[in-house]
Length: 106
Image 1 (cartoon, rainbow, N blue to C red):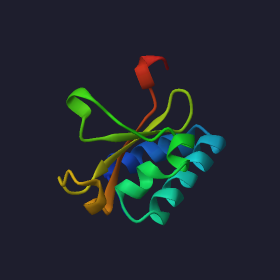
Image 2 (image 1 turned 90 degrees about the vertical axis):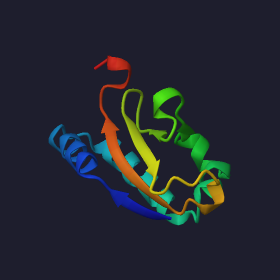
Image 3 (image 1 turned 120 degrees about the vertical axis):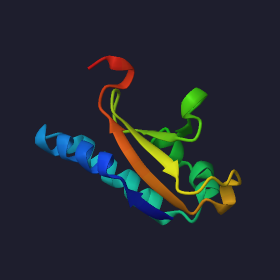
Image 4 (image 1 turned 180 degrees about the vertical axis):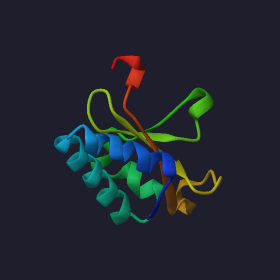
């Protein structure tokens, strides 16, 4: 799968680096490597690794996003690059942001 990075994602990644969150950065890099290995979104969601990283579709006003859990509070927001609803045809994703305050706990 093709992975694109938004400017907000890059800014949030720098925050992780500045806070010296080495374990979280390693987990994030594993998720990105996993995204690059699969061919489309259907393969991503059917693979057992999606359960390890808790990759799931959001609901409500964020229903176009998928999230991956980096740790208890930090989430990676993944959005398909096109608006195609068929998971087989989603072959390009954007890493839109890293939410550092999941549920405003931190």
